[in-house]
Length: 306
Image (cartoon, rainbow, N blue to C red; front, top):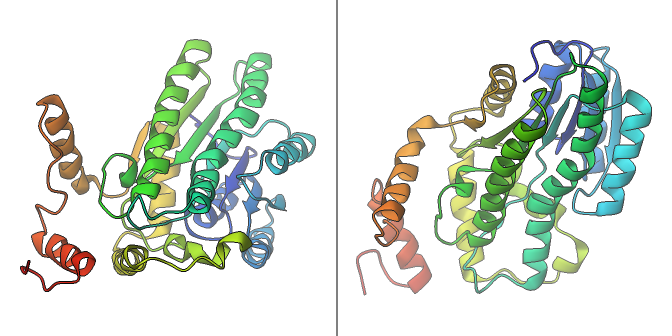
């Protein structure tokens, strides 16, 4: 929980676009010091220029969050410039689809590297700094927010590699919450689980590593990309609205932050199936036409055909 953001420091990964940039904008309005982290230099430069224009203190660093040494260097620079951060937003993420058996080892390494290892590095490096600051000052407040997804609570087909990474982030963050409660009352934790929100996530391929450039997408990956583009692009909740939910969640010490609470019906049916030891439910029960279309595309048949 953080009750007053003014003068506090925020470390935001994926700050060049989407939730990270919108949180930077809110943080600047609240008088925070902003550490902007992104792997895309041009987006980072634009974000830095904009946020510096508000008068906020800004530190911008190009970092691949999947790389331990780069994250360790970042943590050291943050400590030297601002001390322990009060708000850490482990938010950088990439999207990827396709059948789980069609993803290459490099696909797995890239997605898990950013989506999971990026969060792991942020937690393992900044939490000790925050605990040290809290121990020295009983009035010190901090909060860690990790970006997962509704895909971290559900198991939609044809996007298993993404689901796996986000389920791991939910588990990591719930455990972080429990671990922190054992040792401190001054540092909170939240997990952000957005549904379809127009951000840069559907264009993650722009930052694919060079070693993946020569890999030709499979049919299921192309279908997954098209479905993701359509779903994300048609989202009605904005990244700015989700960013405000993040700050409201921190102030209220709320663990689960959902952009689309109405989507929780799908989660309820999944949990009920687990508790009743039933097979996983149809993820398209509310919109069967989408499931039929996906099945037809993957099988190369017409919807409703064999």
